[in-house]
Length: 640
Image (cartoon, rainbow, N blue to C red; front, side, top):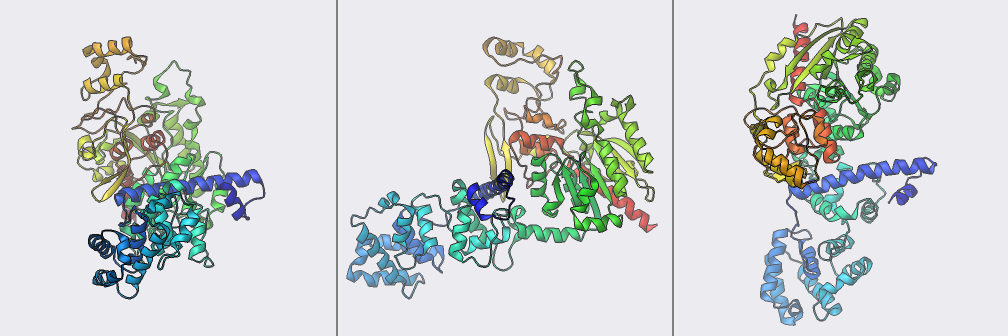
């Protein structure tokens, strides 16, 4: 595929190495997009077939009858013909014409349709007198297409449908519905751009070579269903469409909607987009989002259709000059010159500050001063100095307050840096569970204020308190799965959820999972069930964890309380996040809901990568509360 694309894209750099890398990146992006859409629509429509037949003759007959006709009518005609004639060859009897004409005509298929049915029968039995039509499976695609297109009413696209549904060929027929969806959604963006010069045949040939054979059939049937049910010629139902986040037409409309929002936001260290989603819900439009992690920015782009993709940057903010970023975004220059950025948010990486990380193990040689992540607040200061936003929100772990580097307290250094550029900073440690997040997530929040604007009163966050939600209230309605099982795409009622897959655990882990009580400390469990630990030591090669460094290595979540803090460590194992009622660890989807992400939020990458994105994220509902607080502060100022 890459070689073909290089030949078709002469505008790409003449440097072969550069060209191949560009193409590989494009192919990876499109392949990921098509696979996701194919699986999504396959599950959403529950493996649609559109009435197709596995027998090549019946499929060909079905195609003739459904041309400008309803599928149900065509199926009724086929059922009646099979009931009336013991073998299709009997249709060729002279006296059979009136019967065929009556059956076909009764279904509303008049004109030449009866003759077309008879001609199709004649074609098949002249080639296969014994009626064994499956011999076609041994023919090449070109021979099958040439044979079928000699029948009246069957073109190349229809012949390809026979190849797909009756002969199990990995082809991709394109009809008017599919072409409309592909054109609007621009699913092949980056590899193929449609031009008005391409006729239907040219479009068919151009598109098929870019679609992996492994997804062609599911993508074909799914996009056909999308075209029939949602992506209609007039008045498309974009908001209801299950693939709208992958649709360029929908995304352009969302960008237009977002542009009308009054408040602006820059998302530094954006990750998967918890801050972005929350502030968007509060009424902000994201002007720029940036992160060093390509998996995280891919997730951000997918789930924030109102943010133009070119404004979600995969860059190292510490090494990127602000001027370079600004010059690449033309509309930014005017916004920056007018001082229209309301908020910069920064979910600075917290692992270096966290007491659950390297700081908790004093004998591992970790030195906080040498961890570059612990100095990223300086990047936020640099951007604040250049952009002069009204407010800056920094989120981190509470233990940032006790972290030291270069013989100074990190928090005092952050406050001092803001004071040097005339910003005043206030901070507070909060528990996310009181804002409706089903998780006891204690977080440090700092808000710095431009000297021309009123200081935010963090105590006013109490206005946005919500009833506490227990873990079971949050995830109890997900389908039951077993350890190592689940599905990346699951149909639940009207929706499809993703990433409900539990990691595999060995039998000795599962014994612990089953025996440990909800909320029981691992130290207490070892004393209570020493027999399980001894069995593991004596009869397995699996590592047995002590309690000096891993006092909570195994932990079963408490169902009727908010969850413990969801952390990125879940990418390594889920032993500390055992499901309260099922003998397994939680899935990424469950972790995401405990972080207050909506079910339609799709995380990209492997399971471990997804857990990292989820654990590092700011809970969207908490971010929304912070956004509401900023808006209320600005609004109260104008009222005065």
